Image 1 (spheres, rainbow, N blue to C red):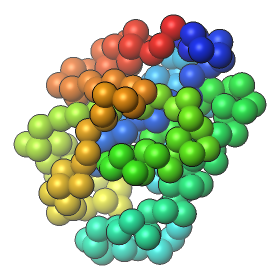
Image 2: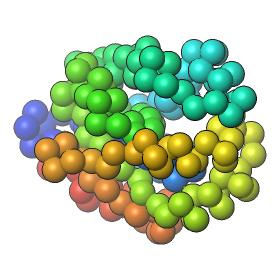
Image 3: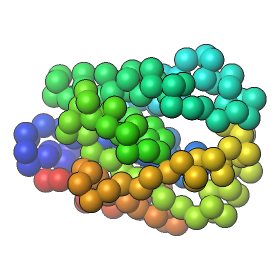
Image 4: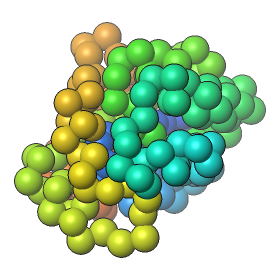
Length: 174
């Protein structure tokens, strides 16, 4: 398992990006690869948020705040317990990531990035998810990529999930 140089504890990782980039697949594989607990951000959404998205209405910042705080609490708990962890979260805006970091300053962000065409095609063929492809444009419009002062890395999703996991593991602070 990769340990961060600063505290020699297992990493706390947020796998982020727009819907359809493969956050869940990569996060599960990365958690398995590193032997860390895993959580799916969608499980932290209140029912009202899911209903709103299912009806094709994008969430606003007010909708997202309780969800982000709950995710931040999960991250902070994993960090405090020394277990590390991997969670998925779109984390599209810097201020959303700041909410997550409020409870877990050492969170490391893996931004999965892909072209609109590639991700749109994935969404068009995805079944059983509440996020409709019609909201992809709003996600790209909202996306603020990781900034130089943010702890993390960006990987293009043109590779296999297994390759992305190996690249992510190699990019973690050691």
